[in-house]
Image 1 (cartoon, rainbow, N blue to C red):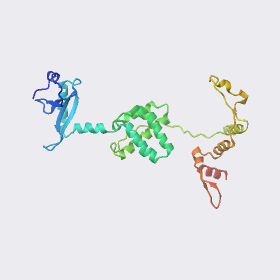
Image 2: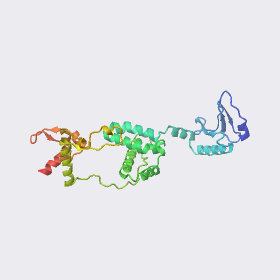
Image 3: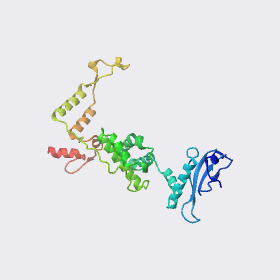
Image 4: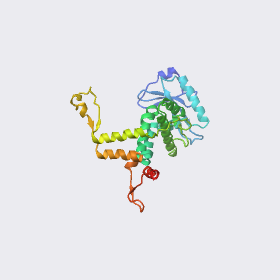
Length: 299
């Protein structure tokens, strides 16, 4: 067998079938020549000890991108790792099979968020993942995403601390799901340990003056209507009613809904999901927790 040199490689020509040229000195190091003319440096070894161990072949790189000496050095390092029990070809194949973060996210959304969480929660998870996470890290292998990657993304969102913290929470949930499915090593979670931004309370109560103005606005809306503005630059602006007639009147149901929210302090979904329960003490009583607390305070 010849020694693989640049002169030898330059003189190789493709045939109708694939063939290999092996180096005389470095056992296992060679060149693969394909019928298409593509040539690559390869290394061949046995994964394990004994004659029954399977033979592996690992591509080191294309001819032209690596010199024979560079490829020979890589082959030596590969065979050295094999001598210590490694299986580089199997590891490379497993890495190719590893799912990207984008693929893992789709599985998480379909089989966890949308299957086991409320529709609003699942929609929130999808928005955070698709809008904030995947554009930055979607094409990375899920196991290759590091805490430093997420910390940088979190830092870039410092002007939106609440959103930045929710992003960490969603990614943490995603990796928790992946660990339980053994799609990543159990316990691997790059979102863990990143300090979150302090958040100011977002709940605020209307003052008496604000409540008064809101009540007056609802009364005006259901009687004479609320005035509205138009964009004078639009083509149809000239057909709009005169300013004194630009008012929108709301119906009695809309006015009643606004007052119900105002008087009970309930959230919109709490009102929409209300159920009536009859009891011996109070027939037709409402089961809304906020409404019950309001009745207790008033009594």
